[in-house]
Length: 98
Image (cartoon, rainbow, N blue to C red; front, side, top):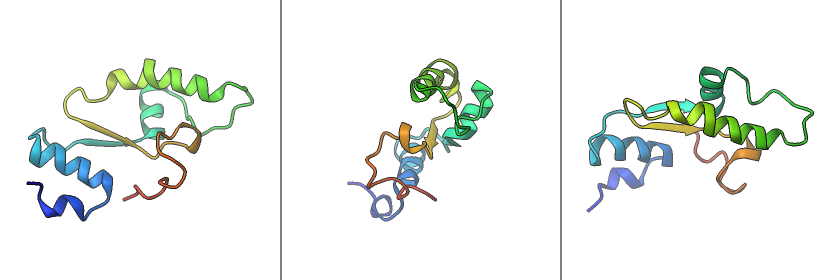
């Protein structure tokens, strides 16, 4: 049975608690989409680009430059994706903030 605490907190907190309490993986690293890009791809993904395929470039950079660094020593929660890159429907955006 899942602890009632897991159902009363914002979803990203649930991910942290699942990593820590259920899976025993320790405290996950939390990075915003922007922080991860600046750290690992050396660009600010929120800077406007005139390129028509800007989102495609961001997706490529995420998979090639950012993702290989995530979850190396502990789980990583990547959050605050820009709307054009968000895996969540528009109705859910913003509801996952701390």
